[in-house]
Length: 579
Image: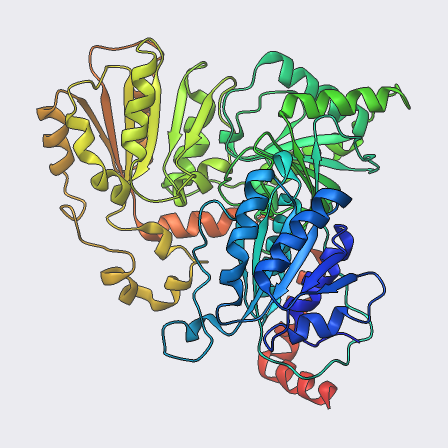
């Protein structure tokens, strides 16, 4: 019978899945939930040691001789301090010793409560990895706990192996009534030389987060992989994939009232770094491929991490597939691309704003140029529409902050003065980073478009929580009224004083008159700032229109019923049904 403490249950379940069966137990109270749960489980091989210092050294000897990981379990107070010499030995000998130190609630640290010590910052050379496992209160806690435990247990043998520390928080539950521990998702790490698991799926999606430029060989490998496994490549513009099986799904997968059947995928291959808004796919499981080999459970469906170069992963799976089949299958790509085009064809004439600008500008960017996008509203709107082929696109999604986009654009433009570098940024991001435009290294290959709506438009969009505050959101949420409050001369004078060419537009006609100059494929005499004034109503309405191009039959039926019966009567019916 197992404890009712879920974090302890999860640790036990995953220890069994990762092959940790040998345990050296020391007496105590805070570790009773753990020891009381495993001592009658026939899977575990448990030894007792009163002295924690000896226990750690016993674990060293047992791990070295058996070749298996060995766990330690101790209570609070100074018990874990006595593990230090043995864990140091394990660290320098790369022995897989798992120190599980049970503790009271971390909020009690420093409050003069007996037997509470701080285990949050272990010494550098006693553990490769140290994690905290707090008590679990909701699904988010449980997910985070599962990822952390998998990560810790995998670290025992990673890169030659070594000791790991888990600080297990207990609430002293006295109930041991659980007959069988509910399953926990197991994450596996696969190295370059290890036998690869079979990829058995009828639909495969390769999701690409922010990614550097692809070379031709890598692109060809991914294309062949898609043909053999019925795959597609999805991502934002800054995935930078230009192969023939690429899909830009943002518009289709952002619909408020329609769930495309293309969302359902058996296995999603996750490469690249931080994306903008995720991909809104519904994968059954995710395989992460990265040479860093780190656990990155972005979509909460991670089951495998392949610690290898991306190009090698696809090459190996091409070889595996060719042993079984030669025929190509691209039905998923066909279905997905047709669905995207069907939704895209429904886009009406939009109000003048960031989305309309993206719609009428992206496909006209000079080929071979570089595009930098500001975060949030700009990245989202430009993701709804296509851009020219062979454009390298980037955004500061690493920290995903408002600062630094213009500086990053300048830095990129310095790398190749013969290549045009375009940037699209909102007013708050622009003024936050405008000082860099005075840098003496700014070249004439830099062109910056400022979408000036006088506030953080993200907070005024129809689907943002701050939208419910109406005008009250302007002062302190959307930061309206700063930086000249949409002054028609502030940026103009600044740009001209710094030697920029200045363009301006407040409506579609003026924009179309000036954008040809902005997109001129030749390097001109001066860098350009193109200031475009928009308003919050048009921006929000555009987004709402784009996210409501399609309504599912189910949603339409629900809306019809609401119209006939009314919201109040529906609520009454729900109460009756519950009774």
